[in-house]
Each structure stands twice: as C-alpha cells, then as structure tokens.
Length: 197
Image 1 (tube, rainbow, N blue to C red):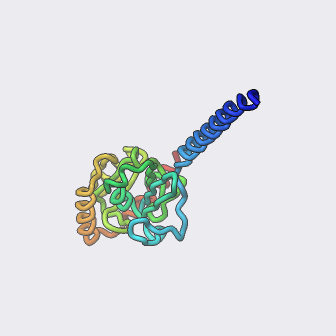
Image 2 (image 1 turned 180 degrees about the horizontal axis):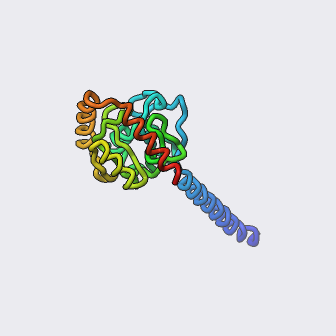
Image 3 (image 1 turned 90 degrees about the horizontal axis):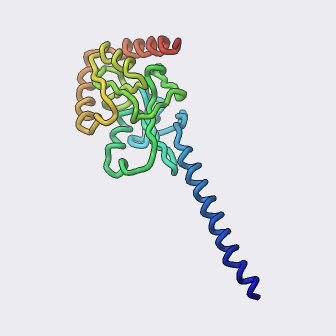
C-alpha cells in the first residue's frame, strides 16, 4: 500500500504539469492568431451598423482573442479605440494601406498595423461617415496625397477625439467645394504607380 500512495502524488503532479503546459500552448497560439481578417460583403460596422462594403475609403478592424470588430472607416475605428474602456483591451488594430489600394475598393491583402501607419487628415476624399483618414504604410505616399489635397500627415498617437471632430467639420465643408471623382481617380493612379514596385 505504501508503494501505491507514493506514486499517486507523482502522477497527480505530472498530470497538473501537463495541463499547465497545454494551457500555455493554447495561450501562445491564441496570441499569434491576431492577424488581419478579410472584410465580407455582409459585414456591418461595429459602431454605426452600416454595411461596410457600401462605402469607399480605408476601413479598420480590431482583432482580439474573442473576436473581430470591423469598422466602415478609419475614423470609426479611432472613435471606438479612443474610448477609455477600449484602450485597455488586448488587441491588434488594422487599416488599409491606401498606397496600394484603390479608394473605391480597398484591398484586404493590404491591411497594415494601424499603430504604425501614417494618416492624412483634412482631404476632400469621401469615406463612409464624417472624417476620412487616409491610411498609408509609407510616409512618402502619405505626404504625396497631403500635398495634392492640402491635408496634414499624422501618426497614430496624434489622433484624438478633438481632431476627429475637427476633421469631420472640415470634410463637410470641403465636400461642397470639391468633387470626389478626381480624388478617387488620383487614388487609383497612386495604386497603379505603387503596384509596379
């Protein structure tokens, strides 16, 4: 009897260690599965509930272990992210690289880390609602768009709620002064120019 009880604690310890290691492996696996997710025609914006595919311009998404929240514009993504309760969440944020995508139909192959992107604010380019923040992986592409349309180039950390509200007001005013067609045509030309690289 003594020999059998001696094996029980070792067996229990081995079982617990095995379960612990299996749990660690699951956590590591989940942490690595926070990559960008493709948009689908039926996806609705997490903030406004509108069908995302019905609007031009870059989209955004927040990818967490428990699911994905998709947004019809980069401005909607920022509006959601800037809420204090959301900034504490463990997740990855993605936006379209408009240096490689057509404005009217952003390509999900070019979803980039939103925190590392460059943003152009204050252009007449039309998006879904409010301000349209054109997102780029490369600073030169962002500066080229800003020079063309008079916008400002900003980094992720520089965008706050006050800037979003100001940009939405400016875009509303500019929408009456500029036709969106040339902007879309310009973005299409930039897409073709960068596709050759």
